[in-house]
Length: 438
Image (cartoon, rainbow, N blue to C red; front, side):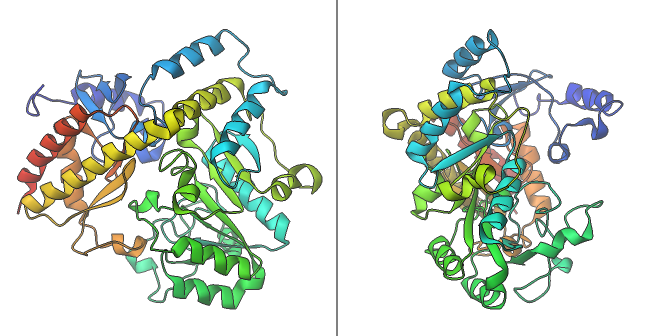
């Protein structure tokens, strides 16, 4: 179907119907953003089909979990077999330690694990454990980093330029209406990739900081990688002051490498949160970390629970997904990252061909496009210079070309995206960029 023939009429009609029963017409407000909330009828491998019959090469991958693509045969077989057995026990079963052992084998910090259902939950457990382990209250986070939608961390996620102070230190900025103002009382915020600010905040508050938490790659605000040695310096400064280091690897875990960003960059945190790719598409997350910290949930009075924690369907999916990712020494995941690197370079070349201020940030299996005149992006504040209208046009034109990208310009690449997908995508992006050319 050509771009001119491609229509979204039925998706628009279904969205109107959905709005009469479902708040906003969608199950997550993030999905209501540009270019268009598509209603999907089917998906397989790297492709999905919408209710209008349009086929797309899918780089949204359900916002990240589908590291094996849609309906991976091994995962389908696993879930089919598990569907004939009990779906939840509320008791112990062998899949719990089988998956935990698989994670232990590849994730450096995972001396012990605890499973739950979402990344937001895992972060809350991690923060509670850090405070219990140190006896301190303050958490240090970075501007633009997303650690879930709970009141305690939805602060300075994507503040407007006018809300930011000119200094590197800024008071935490509430992220939503209805959020209690004292949620900001136990949080400190500084820019990402700023060692001077890191030193300054620890000199002033170091004895009160329980932990510093970060996305080791800033995937939620532009896929900005850490500066050289930044993660190692961050960990060193924190530990000098008796603070713990938390990596939020909900996105980077089992995507940048089987062992996550901590193995890729060679910096081991005290605690890490895992999710998305770990479950291959089912609701699954975990908190992993040092034994003495995780065991505080059983010996140190730290409360934690969840009816669906460790449910057999999710854990079976996790076992199959990780087994596939580490197969042949991790070759499937290396392939996904190589595919993504080809896409990244091809998109950069298209930007240069048509004289567009197009930046591509991130790593192969998770990257983002920006229209920004800066030579490079170092932190969230740099993304405030993005040309939003030009990105919106890029996304809509890409959608018309059959390329499904997340509303913030993010691409996720799976183990099943092929050379054919790459060539077709780059040809489509070239046409898009030609239409955007000044």
